[in-house]
Image 1 (cartoon, rainbow, N blue to C red):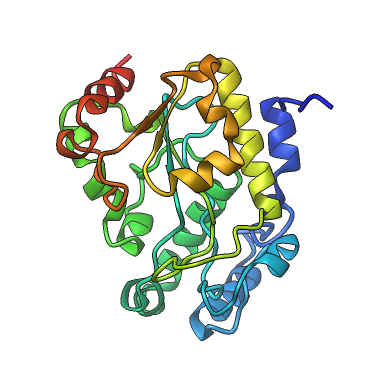
Image 2 (image 1 turned 90 degrees about the vertical axis):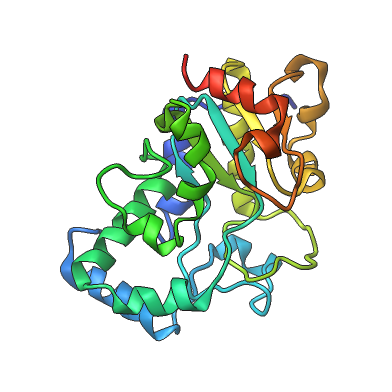
Length: 251
């Protein structure tokens, strides 16, 4: 049976994160307070119900909100394919507790926008709270591109596994239900042939989810960095691919 390519509306309607975890009404102060209390106490378990059987609670920090997507995935010029969000207790947990209530709400709203595919910016121009909670991770790694005049609003980010961990380590590699949705996002973009993908982490894992990466039809759409342990989008790490990406993000 031929795989159906979803329209943008169909993708939005099918998004599993909009049905669970990020289905919170961010305009409801009581609901927001309850969610923030769960995060701060560490007692909340934020994992999509159909992912539970495949996820090891000892390996992943499920008391944090998952971060499957970030930035522009509607009409991006570049999509970064990474592995999973990192975990640092001092930044991810303790810092969140120190934030004022309004800043905590702001962070949750940005997380929801990203998960719902409603964000246009990998680094928000209106709020720095997401960048602060990431310890400036992506602003650092995109700084060279930004300085060279690349348009960062045309960049999207997809995590292979949306749950945070300090070290990824070994994993059973069974497909998550939410990864089936991730595949649909990528396959929609591939049909347009106007988006390039930068596979920065775990090429073998991504190839199992998207075997089309090796197809002649998509030759040139998938690029790789020199060091798979380094996610700097720099001339040094990307070599000739840096110029390709920079040109793409200026068109």
